[in-house]
Image 1: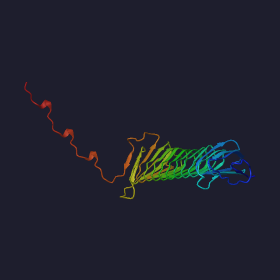
Image 2: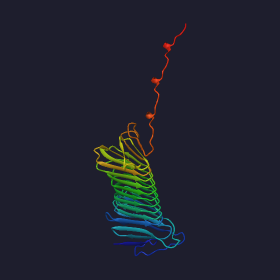
Image 3: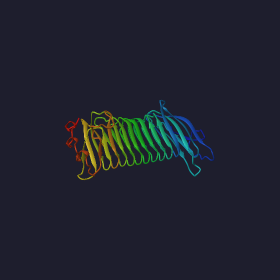
Image 4: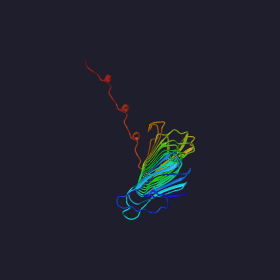
Length: 339
């Protein structure tokens, strides 16, 4: 059975648009049953969406909008809520506070609003234009996209795909595959437990702190930002670090090799242990810093810095010096004295 509500009337039936004038607000406070693995689809223009997971088999919605029309539709497999607007007067924030059964699939969309989910434990797709996205406690696949707001995802037992243009991406304690892209923002992956991570940015920094699992693939790329990797102990990793006009720093013993003959770009490749995991970091003009947790940030006996510099330098020990023992001296006992 399908239920359609005309928000503001409180009567179940065929939904018709309800235009509001002045300072009137459309409001909804209702609870409907949802089957296991059902879908909740929420969208608004501006305002906020908050979704929480709970143990009940029902969806509870408390919603309001300052202007416009709330359209609510519900079946046993899908619940939909959106704001319909028309004309210049239909401006104002909407607010959704929703509780869903754990495992529910979420489809969330705003233009200039914020999206927050907590403990839903289901698949999530969230999209905004200029708002922030904060997702925690999800499972399966999580797909997050925004243009100008920050993205944060944490405590995920599934795959994460996050795309941003001028905001940051932050992922904490994600066990599935991680794909993170941004143009002008930073990418931070902390407490990583995944065996497949790819992070890419143009003008921002990349920071990864976490494990490197056997057989895993880790790929990091920034055009002008710093790529900084802080790696937990691993039985074996094969490293490939490349930069054109930046520097490479690591506390692992390394050997450096210039690529393509006389070009300025540099490559640092080395392997620790069995080398069954692969870590690649690339920059054009930014730094690459790779450190393991078994030692200090920079060890004296390591190949600490590779500078991209085509100008030859004169080593101090190559300059001619005068040793002290080569200068003639007069010993005191050789000078005659008169008593």
